[in-house]
Amino acid sequence: MKKILLVVFDVLALAVILYFFYPLAKDYFLASPPYGGDFLNYTSYMAYVRDHFRLPPASWHYIWFSGFPGVFDSPWSYYYLALPLTKFFSAINSFRVFMMITLFLQLTFSYL
Image (cartoon, rainbow, N blue to C red):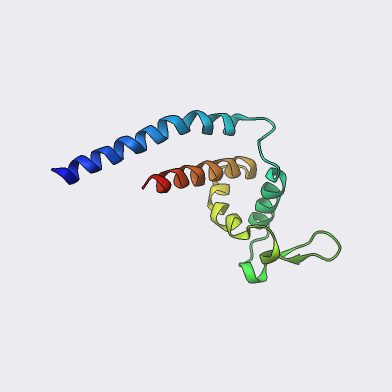
């Protein structure tokens, strides 16, 4: 009985997290211009990875003077994690959805 009660409390706590998280996520998703300093860089790199897909060791960003390997860029693993969302959303909206998913997961696992 005690374990069932603990599971019920966990579900209630996650519902409270979602209840307070939803207005924040809604405001972030609908903000124009979007919040965040690296928003343009992230979305442009994610669109680049979507259009010129290579595995991380072979990826190359053709910017600046001669370019540089993609693994030397800022968090390149996030591009590949968010890439499936670009099938359903634009690069900008897929970034927004990915940020909200990862923030909710951080809050959830911080509680757990």
